[in-house]
Structure formats: C-alpha cells, structure tokens
Amino acid sequence: MTTTQLTPNPVLRVAPAPPAAAAAYFRASLVFHADVSDVAASLAAGGDPGFVVLDSRSTESWDQGHIPGAIHLPTALIAEQAGHLLDTSVPVVTYCWGPGCNGATRAALALAELGYQVKEMLGGFEYWVREGFAFETWEGGSKRDADPLAAPVLADNCGC
Image (cartoon, rainbow, N blue to C red; front, side):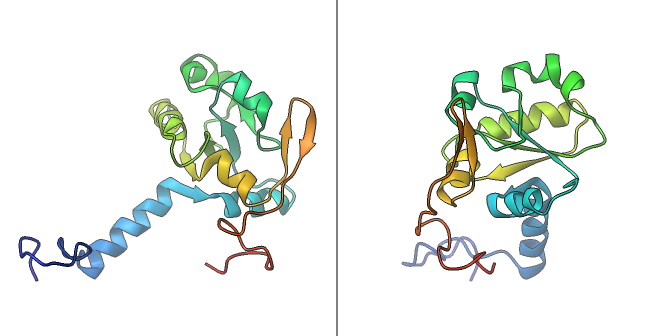
C-alpha cells in the first residue's frame, strides 16, 4: 500500500514506515526522552545517577510539588542562571507539569542551545506523582498511591 492509497482504516490511511526508518525514528526518540520510571529507578539506585533533574516550572509550581533532589530553574531564567547551577559535562533531564505542557521541551531547547546534553522526562511531574513516587512540597515530603491507569500497582515495574 502506498501513502496515497485510500483505505477506510484511519490507522493505515498513511502506511507505516519501513522497518529501518521506524527503527531510526524510535532510536532517535530515546536519545531525546527519558521516562518517569527510568528516572526514578536511576535516582533510587543511590550514588551518582550520571545526570541532574531540572524542574523548569515557576516557584509557585515548585512549591506545590517537585522531584526530590531536582534543581529548580524556570525556563525564563535558564540563559541567565544555568552556568551557575549546572555543569555542561553532566546531562540534564528536564521536566514540567505533564504531557499537556511543553515547558520541559522549551527548557531542553534552551539548555541545548547553551551547550548542555539534555533529555526531556516524558510525563512530567504529573506522571511522577501518578506513578506513586515520593515528591516534596513547601510543607515537606509527600507520596500518593500509584494510579492503576498510569503505573503497575502489584509489580515493581511495567516490564517494558
């Protein structure tokens, strides 16, 4: 089937990419993204995870809740303050609110333009909380039960 051939199936209206092109695309995606579970597992393993986590949201959002150990640097301040807070030899994982927000993408772009190695954490703070990982607020530490629609509740990981 060609990409211009009409089909009643909306999934196949545009044909899938050839396997080699699909592999290149998905490999490239992993270069730019990390998921919440992998970030949490790396941080929980102890020692130096080999990256820093950066919360690119406002101070009010940071106070509402953030990942323990994250660096707070709102996107608007990256150009001015990144050099004082971050080491260009250490990869940075950015996050913002969640999948409906592109703040982590904007922060990652700003950092990359300054010469930092950077990945965006898919799911953001929303999925950090929904997957049941501990977080900090202006009042102290907190944690919620994992949301069964977003994370396994009877296993340590999803197996993917």
